Every structure is written in C-alpha cells, then in structure tokens.
Image 1 (cartoon, rainbow, N blue to C red):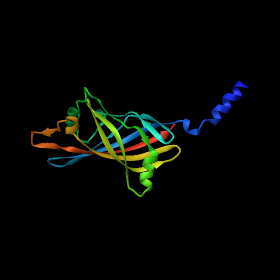
Image 2: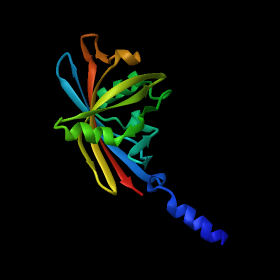
Image 3: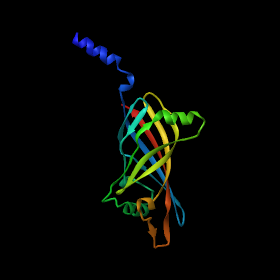
Image 4: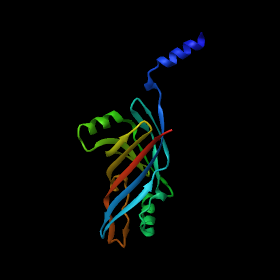
Length: 185
C-alpha cells in the first residue's frame, strides 16, 4: 500500500516539475576596427550545462578561454592575450541565469525579427550587464539554438586597446556574435 501511495503521488505531480538537462556549446565571432583596417576573430566556448524547467532555461556559466581566441594573425593574437592579461585571467565568463523562453517566443511571434536577453559578462575582474539581441531562435523537444549579438566597449572593462608603434590602434567597440546550441541529454 505504501508503494501505491508513492506511485500515485509521483503521477499526480505536474509534468513541469521535471527538468530537461542540456549540453551546451557555442561558437563566437568577434569583429573590430583599427586605424588601418577591420579584423575578425573566432572562439568557442567551453562545453557547459543548462537545465530547463517549465519553459525557463538556467544558464549559470559559459566560459571562453582567452588562449582559444584567434584572429588568424599571430602578432595580433599575442597583443590581444596581453590586453586580457591571459596569465592572470585565462577565462572570459558569461552568466544569463534564468531565461524565460516563452518571452523570447512571444516577442518573435509578434513579427519582430529579434528579442533580447540580458546577462552578466566578466572580463578580468570586471562584471558588466550586457543585453544581447536574439535571432534565429529555434526550439524543439531535443534542441535549442539561437544567435546572440551584442557590442562591447573595451573601456568598460578597463582594457587598453592594443596598438602598434602608438600609431595603429584598435577601436574601443567590438561586435560579438555567438551561436548557441543546447542539446538535450
């Protein structure tokens, strides 16, 4: 009888109590300008986990290793890593916390091209709020994908843009685009 009561209790719980766990990954493209020309780089975030309960995804921490950021120019990459102080601060981290997917769906259903999501971005010891534009949002039973775009200011993170001979320097603003993929486990 005791087991029957336990089973009856479990089956009467709302389905929303059960979480879906996800393995996450992302690819990142960043673009900036300098005195002479623009440049582009890429990076991958380290694998991360997320969980979804009742349409809300918890993305606690996503990290990118500064060493993995690549602009396809060894000298520029070296200066970039020095700017980030890679030895002291090897990771750039982001935390979105709880993201309500129904809000993103609702905004996109109204005919908008994009929605927004807020998160905290930590570069070195500085944490700043960021609002990213969300596009290409697709949600199925086993997978969630989205593209996030935002612009960050190097000055906001007290980063001194790299320069060459004091004549050629990187502009303060850097555009970032991240393609995020969550796969149900």
